[in-house]
Length: 216
Image (cartoon, rainbow, N blue to C red; front, side, top):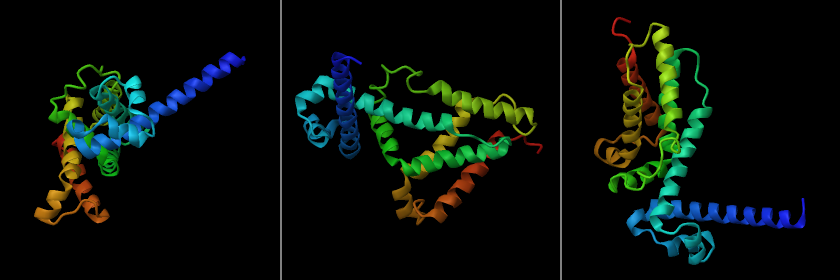
């Protein structure tokens, strides 16, 4: 490697580290204050850089939020793609339920970021392709699971993978997103391990009843 190439590589590494620091600081700022309340000044300070450098990487706050959100989706989609389900389709469905609920419990910031975007009617994600969000990978995972269940004679045919995912995600999502108000109003705190397991058992039962043949 020539001296020029080394300088270029070193510059690219520094730029990459700076960008990652900005994104990490921005995620914390958006989660804490929302899109409207977050400021580029706070993000720059938390990242340890000057505000001009933040604007050099991201021209507007909305573009920075968009990248933070896309990055959050990618983290989940990448983990889903790496997950290895059991051969038995019913056991695999149970594992998908467990994976989703545990991910939401362990990553509440993801729910907050998506909630912020829904408050803004999805305006920031409209410019992002479904490929960039890993949607095809998710649908493929659910489709393969349903196909295996149909071939095994235990799942109903003709189920829409998007509807199945939406139902599963919704059950897990509200269980975590509404955790604090449910704990106050009903005395059920899903952050307690025993309550999380009890809730997961209900979610698994609901999803089984949804996808399995009625004559089984």
